[in-house]
Image (tube, rainbow, N blue to C red; front, top):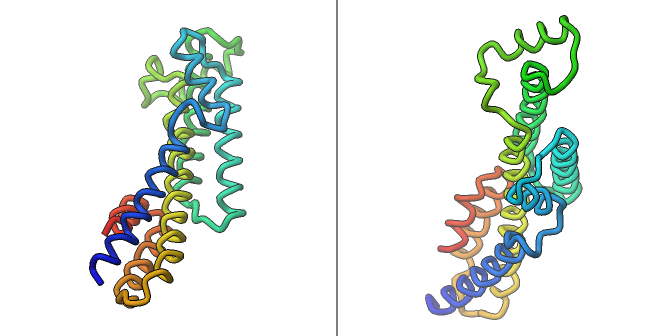
Length: 190
């Protein structure tokens, strides 16, 4: 019986691992973010427009998550932080003289950034938040797929103690619903 549970969980982990690799290896990503990251590594400047594109992609991910019944409260928080950072970088660009602005706009920028070390913020910093949104989407998909694999494999083992596996799956589903991906992944490995 325990061997059958181990086989089911090992199969689920294998598929979960393959899914993780599929969504996280740079050469097979589906968003434009990889292009932007590689451009940065090659010395290209990450611009305001690039930041806007990255934020729009993150918004698209959140919409997709909603449409596919994933919880996304934390992702929305990350998006708000990315948008706030964009505003701060815009103000920093005004203060650095990179954006032409009136005296009133410069004053507004100084007021908005008085508690921030604005010399150190750049548009590339926005990728921290938008990249996290993409990563969390992939983890949510992998976790959901892992649950589905275990559910499908359970039927192949009629002698398995279903109540133990079902309780474990319920805990994993709750973790997924509550956006506790680390907990869900650990539970699925059990």
